[in-house]
Image (cartoon, rainbow, N blue to C red):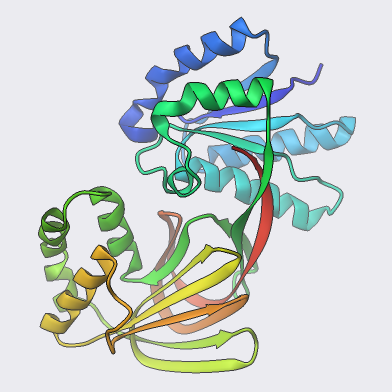
Amino acid sequence: MLSDYLIILNPAANDRKTKNNWKKVENILQDNDIKYTLKVTRKKNHAKEILNYYIRKWKKIKKFPKAIIIIGGDGTLNEVLSAIYVKQEEDRSIPDIPISILPFGKNNNFAKEHGIKRNNWKKEIVKLIKKPVVNDLSIGIFYENIKNQYGVFHNNIGIGLDANVVNLKSTIGNKSKFNKITKLISLIPLLYKIDSFESKIKIDNNKNYYFSKTIMCTVSQSNNNMNLIVIEKRNIIRLVYTLMLVIIGKHFKMRSIHKFTGNEISITIPSLEYGQVDGEQLGSRFYDIDYKITKYPFII
């Protein structure tokens, strides 16, 4: 018999603290006689494997669960969304399955953006069980033409120095500007060695830009738009100052930083560069990548 919910639990999230919270969640589900299937992730990309299996199973019996409940953080959410999106690209008959997230991860950027607080997880469970409200929220999707790779991002996808800056921002969270600047100092050795690269940008298929000394391209989505930040290399003093402004949120008046907004964005980079999507590694590769916005149902 099909369970009402599929629960994806990532026990490694937030330095394995998520595992300790599962018993509390389980008690609430059992007290309310909720029928669910629990799957525990054991490794990176395991959530994708789990979803691939269950989507095939649900399609075969022609019945899908009420929702997928994620107990974890941004990485687990990205794996679940990516698995669903890729399967939908293969088979358009696969429906959007509403997602509910209990943000027990370390950073929980998606949950924070939509007002889901970790300490309110009991409220989220009760809402899911007794009065679910489904909202279509914006997420980003991308297609990498060279590797023929589809993917999803709910926070951002970046190339170049981006991974280090994203990690720095997620580590310091909402701490003081002094702490942010202190953390920035840890990047200085890397900034001395970093090489620039060429990037070609296209916005909404009609505006083209070229940068010869790029060190970072980051695409994020918000308010139904794609946002792109390109940072060019300058001398080390200017570069440190530029990144400091990025980290504290005052960065759009610098000549070395370029901000673009559009419905669709394309980026071509003809050199091997490191990338990340929602904090997860993409590896070192060439890029010919297209980005756009779509909607997905969430219970929040």
